[in-house]
Image (cartoon, rainbow, N blue to C red; front, side):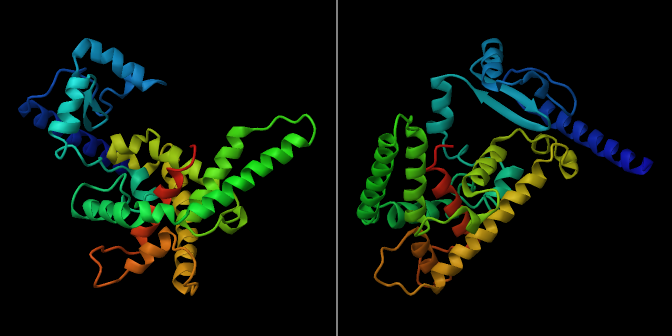
Length: 300
């Protein structure tokens, strides 16, 4: 047991010395000094946006912070943001890797989390031309009309059933889910076809975990210990979606309904393994795109 803690201590010391030596040679913007290993994590509380605003008032529009062992630049003015998001956009286009994106976004293969490069450009082109073109969206017009009519009828029936308050937010959210699932998956699946926890609840948990402050992302050598139990939950969410999306893809491969409107999965499956197509996608890529396509259309 002693040698385990000695190894951890030695690794921590190596990280500290490497970070100190690298920072000594760099010209960095002003910012709080921070503690060894933890950096300035202690300065961020329940509302990190307010804490960062307060720090920016002291250190300036472009501020350097070390969050754990991760070097971070905080930009707090429109002029500075334009430098990062427009003038030098390509330099800062990629999102840094983290455990949530790796597990829940199927190895960071979605447009949201994938590294900027050839794959990202090809995937964006496919989504723009094949999935989100005016022609493709208009092909679902009758489906959207029917779904809206059913939603209105449901609201009317509830309102006519005595003095019962109608939850419009819940109805609109359900309508959005129905339309998204039909456009992306081809039909609306029941919760029991997905997971015992329910489709929406698992999506909500996945989105929450991706945005959670995971200590293992900031201090990599403690990541294997999963101190916050985040990795265990992420793997559970990933397993639920992986099993379900495998089923959806298999159903689309086996389907022979040639006359129906092709949904998003149909389009992507047609490119899978094709030598003629310019898009090189396989099952993990399709799963990542399905996940983003569905949850981005829900009020989560």
